Amino acid sequence: MAEVKLENVSKIYPNNVIAVKDATFEVKDGEFMVLLGPSGCGKTTTLRMIAGLEDVTKGYIYIDNKIVNDVPPKDRDIAMVFQNYALYPHMSVYENMAFGLKLRKYPKSEIDKRVKEAAKILGIEHLLDRKPKELSGGQRQRVAVGRAIVRNPKVFLFDEPLSNLDAKFRVQMRTEISKLHQKLGATMIYVTHDQIEAMTMGDRIVVMKDGIIQQIDTPLNLYNFPKNKFVAGFIGSPSMNFLEGKIIQEDGLKFVENNNGFKLLIPQEYQDKLKNYVGKEIILGIRPEHIYDPLYTQISNGEKVRVLIDVVEPMGNEIYLYFATSTSQCVARIPAHEEPQTGIYKELVIDMRKAHFFDKDTEESIL
Ligand code: ATP
Image (cartoon, rainbow, N blue to C red; front, side, top):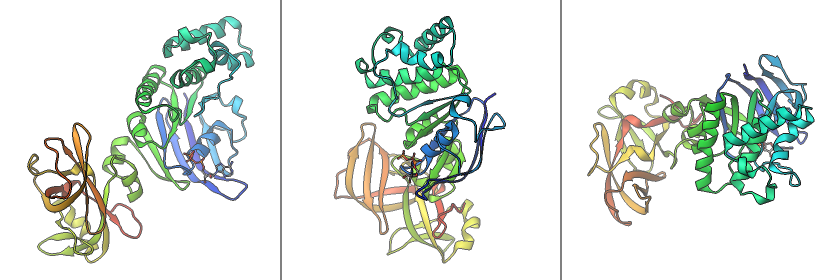
C-alpha cells in the first residue's frame, strides 16, 4: 500500500510568494498521477513538499494515512528523480545506483542483486562501469531512474525528468517510464509542463495555475469536459480557439461573435442550459480538430463559416489552417487531402456539438 494524500496544503515562501494554495488531492495505490501546469504554477513545490525537501506552511501530507509533515525525507520511503539527474560525477553508474543502499547499510550481496536487476529492467547492464560523463542524456536519465528503482520505494516522484532530452528521445523515454510503471505497479507522481506528456502517461492529472488546483481528472475527461477556460486552453494541441460574443434568441439560440463576426446556431441539446445567458457576454471554445473541411467531411449540425486563410502549416498527415475571426486568431486541423493556399477564402464547418461555452466573467464552463 502506498497512498499519498494532500489536505489543504499551502506553501508560502519567506519572500511571501504563495507557491501553493489549499491543495487537496489523493494519489491512489499504484496510480500514475501527473502534476501539470505552466512555469511557476507550484507543481515542483508540491512535489518537493511530498518529498520532504520543502516545509509545509499549512495543511497535511499523508503517506499511507500517516501524517508525514515532520518526517525527514530519508524516512518517507520515497525516491525522487530530478530534472538534472543529480548523478555523482566521480562515481561509476554501478556506484551511483548502489549509493543510497550503501548509506542505508544494505548487505553487499543485496545491493549487487538490486543494482543488476534494475540495470536489466532499464537495459543499462553494459554501462555499469562507465562514469556519468561517458553517457548520453538518455542513458543518464535511465541511471537516475535506476537509482530510484533499487530502493524499491513506496512512491516514486519525478520532477520533469525528460526536459533535458531531445524531442525524439523524450517520446521513447515517455513510453519506457509508462512501461516501468506497469511493471513495478508503484505509486508515481510526475511533474511536467508538457500536456502531451501528461495526457499520454497519467492515469489522472492535477492541473495547476498560480498555485491553485484547477481540475483533477483523467486525461480524457480533461479534454472532453474542462472545468474552465484555462484547462480547456492548456489541454490539446494546437490549443482550443476562443471566440468572444453574446447569446441571442433568433429562431433558437445563437452565438453571435462581437464586432460582426460569426453567427452560429447552438445545437438543440445545449439550448436549455444556455437560455439563462441570452443577452450576456460569453466565450465560445472550439478545438482545431472540430473545425472541418466540408469537401471531405460531412457532419450534421455543422455551422458553415467563410474565412480568409492567412497561414498554412503542412504537418504531413494533416494541415493546420490559420485564420482570423472578428475576435480571435484561430486554427483548424484538417486532413492533408490537398494543400490550400494562403490568402484565399475557404469554407469551413464548425461542429457545434463539440463547442464549449464559458462564462465571460468567471471563465468557468457553463455546460
Ligand atoms: P517550473 O515549471 O518553472 O519549475 P513550477 O510550476 O514547478 O515551475 P515552482 O517552482 O513550484 O513552480 O514555483 C512556484 C512559485 O514559487 C514561483 O512563483 C516561484 O518563483 C516561487 N518559488 C519557488 N521556489 C522558491 C523559493 N525557494 N523561494 C521563493 N520563491 C520560490
